[in-house]
Length: 375
Image 1 (cartoon, rainbow, N blue to C red):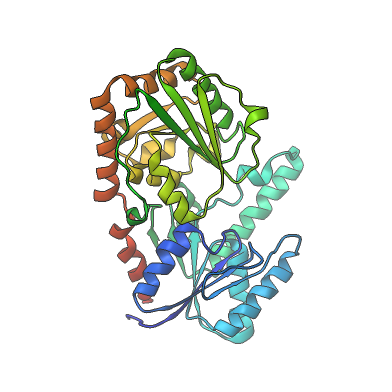
Image 2 (cartoon, rainbow, N blue to C red):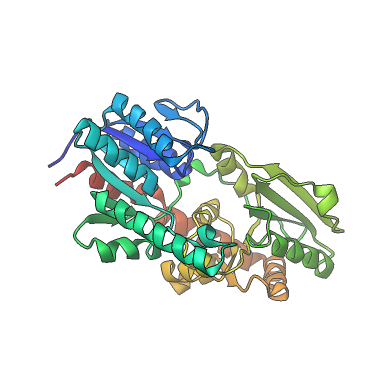
């Protein structure tokens, strides 16, 4: 049965309300269909966005977080709720029991519970107990969920195996290409701007990026290198980086629309995150934004990327590398610099791939149909 003009609420205990995938894609698509869309988020004290209800859950016990969410839900009385976390699911489940509301619970699974992040720095006994506890919590969330949205294959397996009869869709992390500003290609033989976005840690690949840039400056002295860094972490350029022939351009984490305007100014995107079990099986959302900007990508050789993109594609929009093989990475950058036609072809391929195949407009109807049809 097709339902029109519904009240749909995103219940977020992991994401900010202005999350690019939620606010600028999913919520906007539902608004375009005429639905009344609201957001509840426990990750920020306030928001300037319309129909957003938020509070800061830092330091709050989970039962109080759930109670606050229920209070918001009682005022909204939604027909559908889209949750991003087991705690969100539990809050909506309790709201249904207390109010006898029949809202449909949809769990948008973008994170793995438990993951290595939840289990690090624990001894074997504590790690085993926490793993079992998180697994049981995920199982309960699956029991209370009516339908699933999966962002990627590996994160769907737990729920698809345990709940094979529940409806689901795969909704990849494609970018809205209309929001990403395009810039003309530069002569990178004279000036080459490398781009890194993320945490400033070795595990996230930042230390590897610095080593690659330093080696590029040494091996290709006729080219001026600029490293653009965007991160939500503080960074003292003068104290931490002193590389000859390299200009460091550090920017604090930008609002999403500013980020979309900024990334296309760079010439090559770098992401050299360490390869571990979790990252190897997680498809990075950033790669779709880099594609849409129309520039080549040098990425750690993750199984998730190789599984999602056909070999012919990822070999033409960039290179997957061992993040610790600095000489190989420098040689790849040198090849882009010395071979203008090859570089331009990679840029064109990236742009066309994003616009013709991997863009949000091609899959948003799958999402809205899945929400609207509650058979």
